[in-house]
Amino acid sequence: MKQISSVLFVCMGNICRSPSAEAMFRAKANVAGLEIEIDSAGTIAYHQGNAPDRRSIAAGVKRGLNFDGMRARQVEQTDFTYFDLILAADKQNLQDLKRICPMEHQHKLALILDFCDFQSHEIVYTEVPDPYYGAGDGFELVLDLLENSSSHLLQRIQRGLL
Image 1 (cartoon, rainbow, N blue to C red):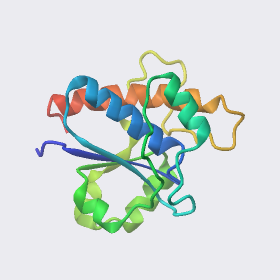
Image 2 (cartoon, rainbow, N blue to C red; image 1 turned 45 degrees about the horizontal axis):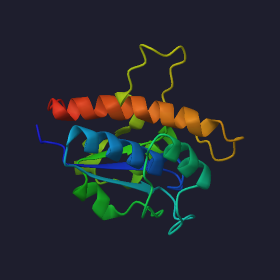
Image 3 (spheres, rainbow, N blue to C red; image 1 turned 135 degrees about the vertical axis):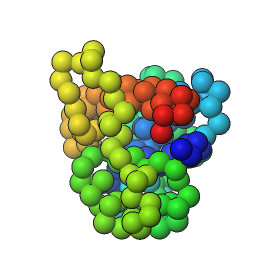
Image 4 (cartoon, helix red, strand yellow; image 1 turned 120 degrees about the vertical axis):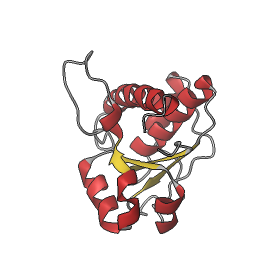
């Protein structure tokens, strides 16, 4: 089994969920002393070049996350070769990735929440909900889910279980 040295988080526009996942996982990896390349991208280029959504940043900064230098970008073909693990926020984005991913790299694709431990949650999520059109409270839920997933993903990487 290959050691995971790079992870790409993907959502649709790369301004809410995937940059939040990038920031959360980067923070957890830094605390653990894990040297791993972490990035995020979107399946569409609509927000290309834009900073993450201000509401994502505000919610993340309250938890000590850093979004400095992040700019939205679209997934590129080279990402499938370069990254060891490519995690989608939801089933639609995973389907979009599978459609453009070369067959030899399909094994790298999964959902972000495939790594969650829901034993302590009353509601089980299979996808990271898109908070973009909500009233703002969805950004906290997104971070809760990403924190859970990031912690368990990090543990699996450290134990060589991926």
